[in-house]
Image 1: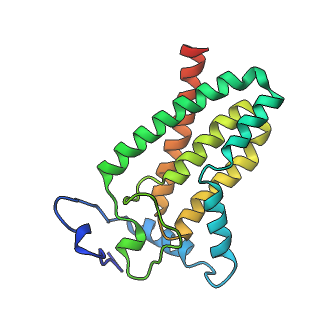
Image 2: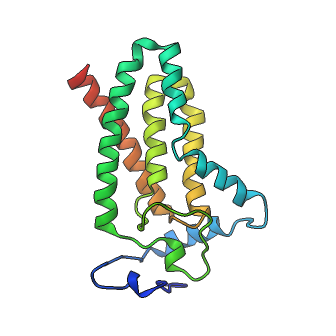
Length: 193
């Protein structure tokens, strides 16, 4: 692959078995997003977007439900609990099975503008969680769907722009997050409430 260097022998050791390869189209889309107006305000903008997806603001939604729609609180809390158990379990299994090297570790010319919490790239954890949250919040409060999914999309783009994910990592995160949200809603509806 063009630009691959596998920085550090730890990424190439047999016991790690990390898979850096991505398709040509994945790499082309990554480079188009990553290289877009890097001398502008966009690096700061996308760092802020990425930070906002870290989860610090999710508590406000539960407070909103508590005061505005208290009859939904139990259902929302059960859905969130089940969803996060499923998503983090799946995330751990997928990450440690695929073991894809992150772009900034696989290519000389890619610099990470944030520091990821784990070693592997697929799927994007930020994208998974933000699409999960957008899915189940939109179910309970549909008027928030457009702003939430717009924000979630920006988070996915931010993770590419910041050099920590490929586009296919983002797509995997979208499917993982939305799928988990839908499954969690179904579980709560059918088996809990």
